Length: 129
Image (cartoon, rainbow, N blue to C red; front, top):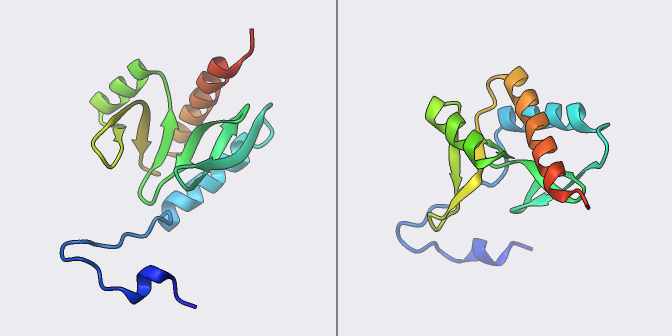
């Protein structure tokens, strides 16, 4: 049976965009999963309908259709954005997510280092006193 939206025409100007990661993003996310899988407290979950790496139940990295997104301190996100390494994350409404950065899947060494930074940052936020 077809999904309900497949039977209806789209309003003018609406475009359907796949939410599945590109093969390059998907392959790099798989490498990051393998890199982080044995770290304490790390598991897989969901973030914005996407598979996410989590530490102590909180997401620190996930893949969108066009980027790998990581949670880092705001100052680090601003620096990476200014350097051109990534782009600050915004929600569809234009709301800026100050501690999230969208990255391309080009430099595996950099992405592994940033994933480690993101994991440590989120772990520091979730530790119980």
